[in-house]
Image 1 (cartoon, rainbow, N blue to C red):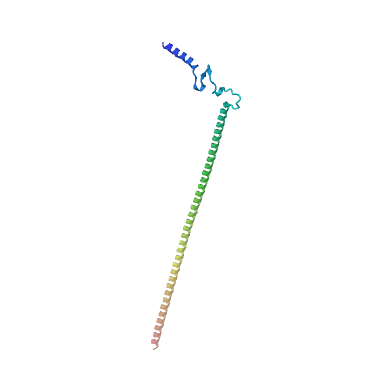
Image 2 (image 1 turned 180 degrees about the vertical axis):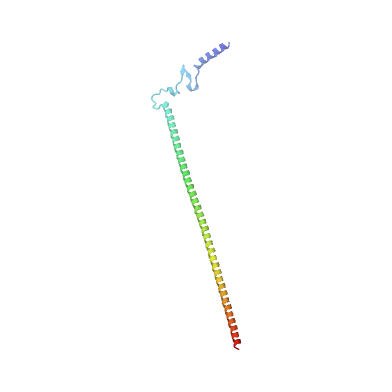
Length: 178
């Protein structure tokens, strides 16, 4: 029974397929399909425009335009990337130049500070030397004055002693003369 049912449904399917009219095929009239609206079967040979090739040309034109647009976008993208690369390179070189300048300025400042420190140390040393010389001169002068004072005192003492001795000798001589 199942076999008969399967065979009957397969046979019905094959027979029915040939009779089906699809809406895009047009209607079935007078033993045939109406081909008035089917452009594939257009027999109007006096028309110079062939729609079969027009669609293909439109598709090709569209594909060509798409390729051109894609190529143009790729070219713009490459140009943009090139500009960005140049900007990045320029920024990098500017940054390097500024870094070198800052480093050079820092080195110059260090040199100036070192030179100032050396100058200050030299000035301090000279100041100490001048002060030491001044103190030595003052000490030498003081010693010289002290020595001269001592000599003066010795001379005056010697003079007093001499005067005293002469006075004594005079008085002794006067005493003896008397």
